Amino acid sequence: MDYTLLFVQVLNGLQLGLLLFLVASGLTLVFGILDFVNLAHGSIYMFGAFIGASLTLLLGNFLLAVVIAVPLTGVLGYGIERLLARNLYDKDHLDHVLGSFGLILVLDTAAHMIWGPAGISVPLPAWLDGQVELFAGAVIPTYRLLIIAVGLAVAGGLLWLVNYTKLGMLIRAGASNRTMVSALGIDIQTLFALVFALGAMLAGLAGMLIAPITTASIGMGGQIIITTFVVIIIGGIGSMKGAFIGAIIIGLIDTLGRSFLDQLFELFMSESAAETAAPAVSAMMIYILMAAVLAVRPQGLFPPKVR
Amino acid sequence: MGKITKIGWVTAIGMVALAVLPPFFLMTGQAFYLDLATRLVILAIAAVSLNLILGFGGMVSFGHAAFIGLGAYAVGIPAHHATWGGFDLIASYNGLLHLALAIGISALFALITGAISLRTKGVYFIMITMAFGQMAFFLFQSLDVYNGDDGLTIDVRSELPWINLDEPLQLYGLAYVSLVVAMLLTRMIVNSRFGMVLQGAKGNDERMVTLGFNTYFYRLTAYVISGAMCGYSGFLLGNFTTFISPDMMHWTRSGELMFMVILGGASTMFGPVLGSSVFILVEELFSHFTVFWHLPFGLMLIGVVLFIRGGLMGLFKGKRG
Image 1 (cartoon, chains in turn blue, orange):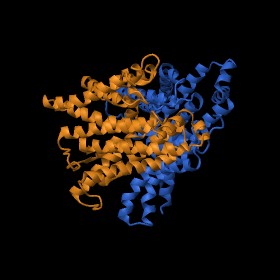
Image 2 (cartoon, chains in turn brown, blue):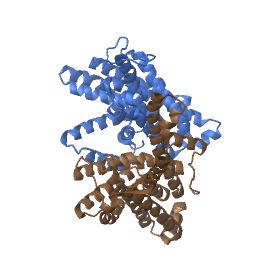
Image 3 (tube, chains in turn orange, brown):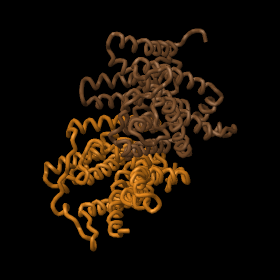
Image 4 (cartoon, one colour):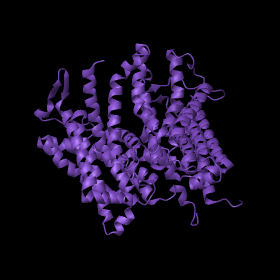
């Protein structure tokens, strides 16, 4: 086996996992605290990508564009909370799903109207566009390393925010007993809107980060949302730790499965059979993993203690 | 009994209209509307099947489009092999074989995924059924033998005794009769002891368990029946469009199906039919005016969720409901 390739693919898997974590953390945060299922979370991710792409082209500076675009997606999230989500909190999950499904149609079409049907590719600054040779033969695009670094930094920042700040304390308190929090004089409505905006910013950031690799496109939200669901189902819906571990597991398994499954299959079946079976199985692998986890632990690996 | 209720009238008028109007369209040379009606009736069958578990069983399945796709591929794959060779075991144009495959494979898929998903509740169930639906989508997308993403063209429709599916009116007739049968079947199931337990478990699972019912088993049975019925609608859809692709199984298709049920009114007999009718007609109307029709459509969906309780059928219920 080619260990250098394995190493590179592990890094790629880690990069995908951290990107998934950015999307999943927002989704799980919103669900854990607001008890709201937001299917349109993927559309916010897509909007982040488009806003970031437009600003990059406008300003000619990718990093500056990201710094400006992240708060903008926060504003988008805030608006969605005010206009739609807030009116759905009292209803059941089915209504959340259907309402946010309608929102997906609205947001995706709006993106189509603003940016046109074709995707936008995002140019990277020269210093990010290169490759780094970590050791002999292990060549990794600099930008992927940046995504890994940002993902880890955000994960650390969220950990700090939730566990060591006053806002985090309110967030945790709101998750376990929202009536009590609001009875203690905390403006729960504002807290909810802030959490929603934070979730939107995380998703938007993920969209901006992936756009230079995949381009910003209309369908990208619908693609990532399902994988994100698998992540938080495996991790336990509402659990930040679960989202992190679930995202890393899914990122690694998906990436490694796509690159190495055919070689694995060739060990016990003919080459042609392996070439047919491997793509099919690797396409289903994360779902099979999800099914396996659920068969053992129906609430996911790290179910939140409350609820 | 005796006096026919408002809902009874709506149901009767709707079903008569669906029986009479399409042949009339064909006679007046507007074949397009017959096509529209065929698609509508086939999707109504799928919506009726979803309503059985969503409306009466309280199981919010977000992956039902997978069954439509499986049913359609049960027509496409044997026909593909009958035309191009290979896979002799199933290579055939025989409609009864296609039908058996569509129903059998859908039921099997429902049994396996249902056995796992039904261990969970609420949001977990919604997301898991969605994920399993996407699994089927990605599976067929990855199968290069069947053109993956690009889909399959069905060159020869299923050959059934007595019915020629190449005749649009006969295909419509089959779809319409199937819809009526699906509705009667649902009604029979819902009013049976089995259906009572199912609805009881929807209302209060703990109570039914305490009464000694294995509600998991009841739910799983209903899920399998629903999946098989939906697979049957896929069999019809494949024969109608003569083109099938993984896109039929995409989760947004499942979302649309769910919407049809809620729009018309879940846990009513005619609701899913009314919902799919309105859905398809509005979709058709909006897409005439603008390429951006999804925008008003999405707003309409949001409006329905926010303002219309109990779906359109709820409007006919009268004050005491």
